[in-house]
Image: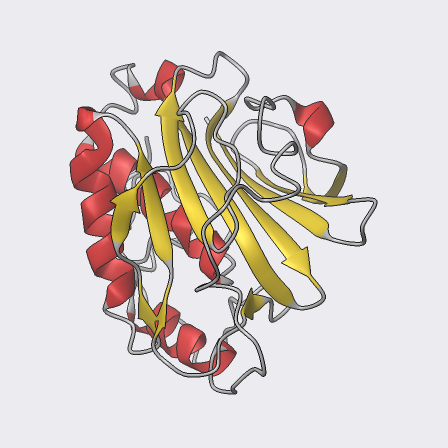
Length: 246
C-alpha cells in the first residue's frame, strides 16, 4: 500500500456522470436503501446512509431489503444493497443503475465478501470507502479522481491505494449533488411503489459476471483500474455498471 496525503480539489472539478438523477418534484428526495446485508455490513450501510443524508437535497434511509443478498435483484424506486461471497471475479464492489431518459429508476450495490474476508480488505476504511462510493454512484455521482497514486481528496468518490481518509463524502460531493438536483421534475422515480422492477433480470443472477454488464465504456478490466459499462435494454432503458476492482 502507498500512504497518501490530502490536497484541495480544484474549484471547477465536476463529478456528476451524464447529469443522470432521480426524478422528483421537490427537495429533499427520499431514496430508500434496501438492507440486504449481514451483520458485518450493517454498521457500514448505516454510516453511508447518514453520510449521504447530510446532503440538503437527499434523505437516504435504510429500509428492509426486498431481494436476496446473492442475486441482488433491482427493485423500482430503491437502491438494493447486498453482500455475499460472489467469488474471485476481481471486483470489490459493483453498482448498477437503471436509466430511463435522464432519470434513474432503480439501482443495486453489491460488495464482495470473497475479498472483504481477506486481511487486505477486511478493514473499516476499505469497507466504508466501497460502500460509500457505490451508493454514491446510484445518486448520480462519478469519481473525483481516478489515479490511485494521487494524494487523497478526503472523499469516498476518490480512487486510492490507502483509503484511511477517503471513507466519507466531502463538501465537493454535497455541492455537486446540489447542482445535479437544483431543478425540479414533473414526475418522480424515487417515491413510486417499491415493487420488483420490470428489468430486475439484469441485476438478478449476474453475481458479477461481466457478460451481464454490456459494453466497456471507460477504463479497463485490469486490476487497480477504473471500469464502467453500459448496456441498452430492449425497452430503451440503459443499465450502467460501475466496478471497483480488487
